[in-house]
Length: 390
Image (cartoon, rainbow, N blue to C red; front, side):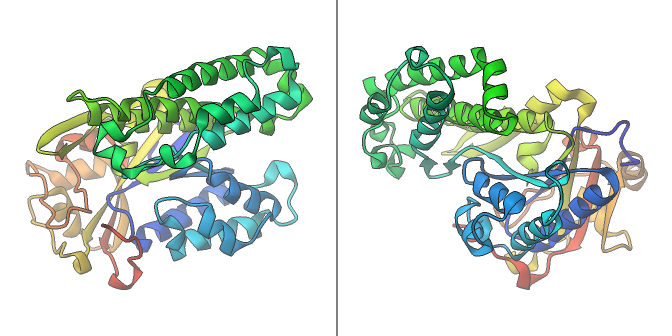
């Protein structure tokens, strides 16, 4: 915290790859210290925001079991991580017997999205509608439950994985989907206009969840719409929409108080994200860039880098890369702030590291100045890898 100009509302800790528990152990240690020394009460992970409600219910009230929430509360296969399991277990133990105001909270801030496609908007839409039905006069609702059910249809039509590569397989631009977008917009508008009544009649937490249902429903319907697009900008737009959904969730989480955020470096950086797909360059603003533009110094970001991941063929980094310069230092793991990094780099103009494994994203020398600090871990133990990378 001493490296930062002010206490951030969101402290973002990135990782250069998924699946290495040594990085998550560092994250867990940091979160415990932030809780015990700095009063942090929330951690947000790059995981499905709807699934994350199961984890939050478990850590705050003990609902369900640890096995259940690890299986059903984390997306992207993250429930298989021993470090993620230890995080959830520790949060539940910390909360046991504490007053509500002191309990730790868990949040997923990713949309219900996978690289193979997107979830149906059914869960988010029906949950939002049910909340409004319980607390708002029926004549203000734009539709009935039966209308939503008819327009949503069979869930499989939304989750057809073939739609990611073949826009013609998507249902996102059907007449039913377009009508659902209008209804979702009306439901969110009703939620907004009834805010004073809803907070008083239900609870701030229930209202906050309803807002998340609204963001997720409209975001998913927008994502499905552009999955059906056939223009050259289709993939760029989908990547941008995912990070936009992440950013909206992070800004809502920031309203609770200070939170630690953990995700891939690419989602949390202040710069644009880039990749190549189908031989074409794809570039979009990351969630971190969107949040930083709105929060200013209320958003702080620490990128993480690894020296070696030998079990994936990522060996000692070349000495003229950022990782190579950091690898030459004597410590096994450390935090490097911008001032120390400048001294380490000296007169060297670092070149980008080329990883032999596609799953590792090296530090980009051009983006160094946009980080508040860099967390460096010299070696990733082979026995801790857990995430299946296809």
